[in-house]
Image (cartoon, rainbow, N blue to C red):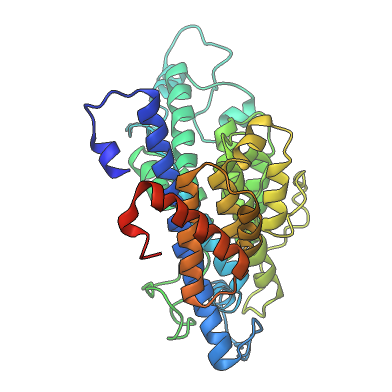
Amino acid sequence: LEELKRDNFAARGQQHQNSESYWKAESNTWDLVERLYKLRAQALAEAQDDDMSDGDSGQERATTTDYVVVQELMGRSKVLAEYVEVKRWLEETAGEFQAVETRKGYLFYTRRMIAGSGAKDTRIVTEADPDAPSRQRRELAAEDGEYSAGLVRTLYEYVRRGCVNNAIDLCVESDEAWRAATLKGSLIWRDPVLDPSDIPGTRPPHTAGNINRALWKNACAALAGDEANDAYERALYAALSGRVDEVALVCDGWDDHLWAHVNALIETHIDRAIADSTLLYTPAQTAAMGHAPSRYAPARDLSHVLDALASHDSPALRHAAAEPFRRLQSAVIVDSFPAYLAEFAQHIGADAELLRVVVHIALLLRRLGFALPPDAVATVLDAYVDLLVSENRDLVAVY
């Protein structure tokens, strides 16, 4: 894949594009296998050596912060740890995008029109604070409106790729520190005085994060639900607060939709853990916010999400979910590779490259100690040996 990317002088024909697409799909699949089975192998070793369960064997801390609650949740919940790895995988394998350039001077053209003399354009806001367009139901100057649209799309794309800090930096560099502050509302509250020494992560010199994150998330939901706002601005704050509705409006493919759902699942787990914990303070009340509830019912788990994508109303999404590597990735994600392998062994097709990948995943998992159906392993291994007989006899004895 890297060689193809460096091959700038090669003809970008269909064959080249198909080859690059294939190697990217296989590269991403092995990345996913490594991430998830590293966690599962660790859990398998713990279960065999210590007979450990998923329950919390420790005592609840009497003095705690949101950050401590989340870290302890990550440590004891194998399911959530896998969700986090799937989310990181989707973020780090996302395609490239063109970020908007930084621009100094907050609403430069709008402020100049407001300050100017003579006839006024009744379509343009008369005040230059961030809420003016939604409050007055008017527009920014054309140049500012165009830049603002590009900016919020870039911010969303950064968040989609797990680069919230890049989004915050872009806001500051573009003289929109107020927007940077709204993005920082997503950070989990922590206090170095209260955080115990055994909690992972760099200890900040002072308190950090949002002590009223639940209230902030309700404000994000209200902003995301306002159809007068830009689609990517709605998606940005929906993603940060764990909503699916508005993110789905800008999703292009299978990866984007899966990311939106796994992001929401993680936020649901975190919210529930914080709400159920004993904290040192009473968070601000959110019951009176009155924002529209999400139209998407919270998914039970990723298996439910992947089934929904496979039967989605969109033909393009259904087609993407049925692609060979997508089906393999789905099986890895929901830990159903043994069932996938059994089905694959019954319907081995002409895709020699996919056969090679499935065989090596099976050999890897068997070596790591995971149970696989022996007949299915033997069948795919025999098929692979037959392939080697015709294509690469030097490797036959190895397999």
